[in-house]
Amino acid sequence: MGSLRIVPILLLLASPALAQTYSIGRAPTAAELAQSITLSPTGEGLPPGHGSAAEGAVLYTQKNCVVCHGPAGVGGVTSAPNLIGNKGTGPGDDAWKRVRGGEADGALPILAPNATIVWDYINRGMPLGNEGSLTPNEVYALTAYLFVLNKMIPEDQVLDQNNLAQVKMPIGTDWVRPPDWKPGAPRMAGYPY
Amino acid sequence: MDSEPSSRRELLKGGALAVGAAAAGASVSKTALAQTPAAAPALPSYAVNEAPEIPVSPDVIAYGVRSHYVKSLRIQEDGRAPGTTARYNDFGLTLHIQTPLQDSIGTIQASSLHYCATTKGAFVPDIDPAQHTLLIDGLVDRPRIFTMADLRRFPSVTRFHFIECIANSASVTHVNVQQSHGTCSNAEWTGVLLSTLLKECGLQDKATWFVAEGAEEVKGASTMPINKAMNDVIVAYGMNGEPLRPQNGFPVRLVVPGFEGIFNTKWLRHIKAVDQYQLNMNDFGHIRRDETSAALGYTWGPKSIITFPSGRQKLPERGWYEITGLAWSGNGAVRKVEVSTDGGQTWNDAELKGIPLPKAHTRFGLMWNWDGDEHVIMSRTTDEIGVVQPTREQVAKVLGLPYSPQFRPPGTNNTIMPWKIARDGSVTNGIA
Image (tube, rainbow over all chains, first blue to last red):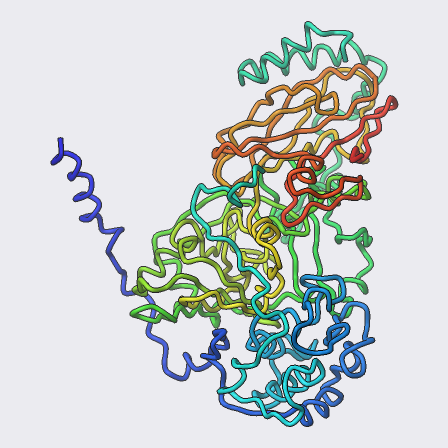
């Protein structure tokens, strides 16, 4: 009986589908790999560069951020979120109460669990209509500007690839990641529907 | 509805046992003919071969078009009327286009009617498949770049799956099923399993998550668990018998069965295997304060909807009709669908049309003899892991939230949708 149970396992191991590779595709070059814009929360993947809030303030007007998001990050068009939190008085505030509408509508620097998200969001998605056009230095500068507006870093701090991920975010650890996913398991333990 | 209990019960039994469909059909047409001689349209005045001819053109021969009598169209979400093109490109707004479920037949949406969503106005990238590549890197032994031709050399899968946007949340203000449920579609997807590609690249054991990134203007990226990648995620290049449509991700996209719509990354260009939750641009929208909201906004539970009779439709007269609709679940296959015609007091098993497939739409039907009275009709489904679709009130109660007709269930809304049939046969939103 015991040996019979082993037979299907051996068949599986012998099956080409399990272990086979097909030698299709090619290895990327170092230059191609370097084009990746995917960032880790630790800062791994950030390109070299630096920027200050003073530079960011100039870019904020130059790049037309102000048109949608309003002067100094508030009072823009309805479809663009505020970029500074309500009653932004500093560390210790309840981040979730500082944003308009809560959750995904919230001011990015307030609800982002890592500084890298703010950098990534600007780098990928801004400015509207000309996405991906900002240089790394410009993204560092705009990120620094938003952080200074929200009193998260000193006004004269220069952000770069080494210190960006160290910025303490207003939300702290007051957020949850999606649940573990397993095939055939319900959406949430204890939730009946 | 109680005026003919015996015949109704017979039909319900037939539906529940999934037998005698032809017999039921015969009895329906006999009944309909007997009841409606005056309402029957006059026979065409022309003989069979004298019908007007559809003009033939090279275009019509090369790529078919539907009859001009068929008017079913997609709409823009939030009630914005079709045809107002200026609004499609509204500055910075997301665009959700809803499928006309009220007209749907069978279980798939035609590719031209499949729902779609974009991050900015009507922006859809125009990608040359000969130039497009997919990079897989990160925690793999052999990073690889695949051309679209490369992807077709791998063993393929062809599977039916629904994709549903988290915005597909029925509310008391929706007038028809297109508004309330049209941000969900089902299609036949063909491609290569992501697990096949990750094995080809030598996925490392320490990989726990992967990031998928599109090639559209914002390079939208989402983080997903690696065990999902190794389970059933498809790198799809085909849809309903032809290449993907641009709005649905041409030339290649992810299909992530059961996960909320935005995870199903379109215009896929990069997969990176990583060892921590990455929090990319699209993940920011999933950040929640409590575990309940985070979990319920992630994947879809069991859900069903009656597409006929549904909002803005009208039953022309009392008599037999097939109540029909669609059921699906992100947990697996649909096991059962029940229909109530008395506001949820009693339930009858509906007939499932065909074999329910995992994480795919299943059509159901139940023959019903409308007695001309007011009715609230609704469907509920139970999936293969035994989870039952809830009412809106049940969700509010279990989450300890106050209930009103304006209640918006958190996360992916899989609640039961009631339709109210008035004495004149008109159908309206039955949420109360």
